Image (cartoon, rainbow, N blue to C red; front, side, top):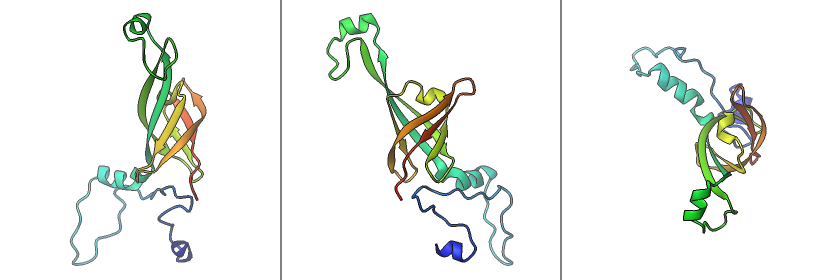
Length: 146
């Protein structure tokens, strides 16, 4: 890319996933002489630096329906006998350009379907690649378009 040819880090990754600007909060370039200084907090700097790598994770799972619920509400179109569909939501962080995402294990536990939404609104089907329930960590893989 043109950025790489100029010796700068590219602003986007060729896979289509957002890149992460790894500037440390508080280590901003000096203010030009006579220029107005911008006020930013360390929180604002952190959000600007890593915000594009944060994703929303939506899950669907089938859970056992309590006996009384099945008796009171017997017809729940599309759900199996004794089960109901449950939705969940969490967040994650893109770790690599090839679509590896880290989240909490409880977010994807027993999920039949995982959908990952990027900050720009694009969605991808996610595949849970591994979990560690003791550490409450999970790895999800998406296939970024490239």
